[in-house]
Each structure stands twice: as structure tokens, then as C-alpha cells.
Amino acid sequence: TVAVLNNHFTLASMTPIILLVFAACEAALGLSLLVMVS
Image 1 (cartoon, rainbow, N blue to C red):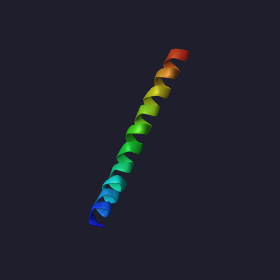
Image 2: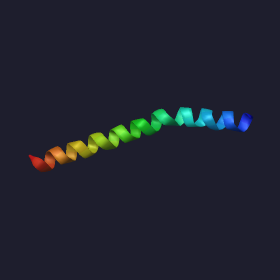
Image 3: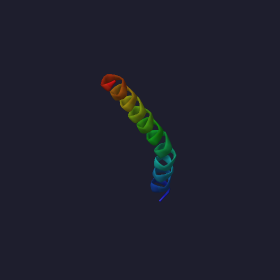
Image 4: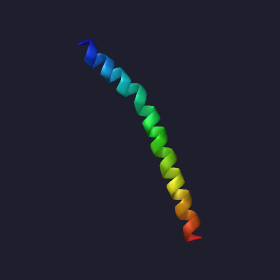
């Protein structure tokens, strides 16, 4: 149906943004951990 197709398209367009946010959070977490250890 059109609704399912639209939902899938929204999910597909949102996925890279979520991955980008996740990567940024992981990088910030790793950086803060590195600062704490050193």
C-alpha cells in the first residue's frame, strides 16, 4: 500500500542521519574516555 511505501521511504531516509548521530556520540564517548585515561 501507499502508506507502507511512504513509511519505508521515511525510514530509509532517516537511517543515515541516525547512523551519523550514533557515530558522533561514539566518537565523543571515545574521546572523553581517552582524556580520562591519560
